Amino acid sequence: MRSPTDRQTNRVERSDYGRSRGLRRRNTGHMHRRQFLAAAAGGLWTGSILAQERKGSVNERLALGVIGTNGQGLADTQAIVAAGAEVVALCDVDENRATDARKRYPQAAFYTDFRKMLDAEHKRLDAVLVATPDHTHAVATMAALRLGLHVFCEKPLTHDVYEARQVALAAAYYKRTTQMGTQIHAGSNYRRVVELIRANAIGTVREVHVWCDKVHSGGDRSKETPPVPAGLHYDLWLGPAPYRPYHPAHLHFVWRGWWDFGGGTLADMGCHYIDLPFWALELQHPERIYAEGSPVHPDACARWLIVRYEFPARGTWPPVRLTWYDGGKRPPYFQEGLLPRWGDGVLFVGDKGMLLADYTKHKLLPEKQFENFTRPKPTIPESVGHYREWVLGCKTGAPTTCHFGYAGALTETVLLGLVSYRLGRPITWDWRNLCAINEPKAEEYIRREYRKGWHL
Image 1 (cartoon, rainbow, N blue to C red):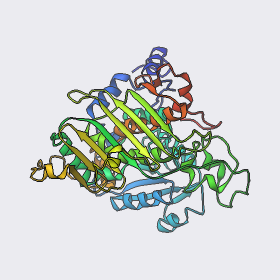
Image 2 (cartoon, helix red, strand yellow; image 1 turned 90 degrees about the vertical axis):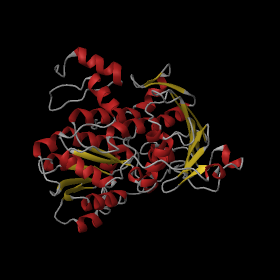
Image 3 (spheres, one colour; image 1 turned 135 degrees about the horizontal axis):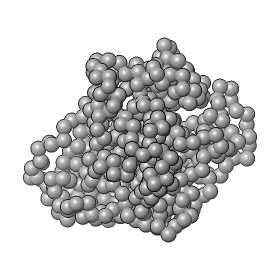
Image 4 (cartoon, rainbow, N blue to C red; image 1 turned 180 degrees about the vertical axis):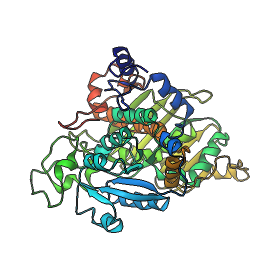
């Protein structure tokens, strides 16, 4: 493999993946484009080097570092521990919110800066959980991967499109076992839906609708500048995001409504719901994306969105248009009375019928037409559990279903809807070069600038 300073290698990487700084593995070189494409085409990254070196027993406890200890982070930690891990280190920028985790895992070392935690503890760690707000997902994940640690990261995988590509490349290059927190992917219902679609139960699918009624939008920023609470390391909470004066309306539980830290409802829920058609129809990179929504605000995310993604043909699969709705918007089929009462969900439209699904249930429509339908025999094995998949993968090299190769492309797709919305027009996507064709202004939404002192 060529030297990291080889200009030809750098040129190839920029051409194929956008303006990458280069992925280094202990300064040994870059990942070649052909390696990445082969891994992506295979669908699952191969087993981890660490597992092959250790040949550890599945009964060993995985040494875990936790970055983000409250809310979803605490729930993830408990589930990973139950699956066979031991918490060695905890990190949270808010010491007040870390209290519960520190009581539950008193043996764990505690830090407020994940960089210091990784520097001090990486030799004792096997793996890391990243459950911070979106804007720090990528920097924490990449730091862990570079140290040879396996990573479980909450969804969306990253805050911007460029980060998603780089994290996926790094996971493949370092051959770590990874999993994104799309927990419902492990459920039986999604498996049965995928089997029905692939068994041609509703015929050829060229149209999919996905909707979620949540609203995450921050509104206008407050001009008040209250003092930073004791125990909150606010500068660390900001991380790579632009500096903003502290205000509680920007932080815990509400950060998703601000562009600096989240991406609204689409970034929050898109990876959960779009995951189902992504899996069932073997989607990967859209060609064209068009978003409309509430008036674009410079700071706050959209109050509602409708995003149309156009995917090209994939092998024997025909082109597909997938439409996302949030903030109370829904597919016209509801207004036309063609669908039953339903919460958030996914609708596959085939030339022989429709399939309506959510996390736990699904229906073939029209119901009368499918009264005597014989379901295909299950072909997708039941999951051992979303967290246990990852823990076993870390120990044995077994594949995971939401590894960063899959999750990276899914996250890119989701976040491209926000690029089109903020740009204010459709974009034609060149996935190989990570750019919107003839739209140079889109670059600022594809790859954000980091605050001084932070890097990917």
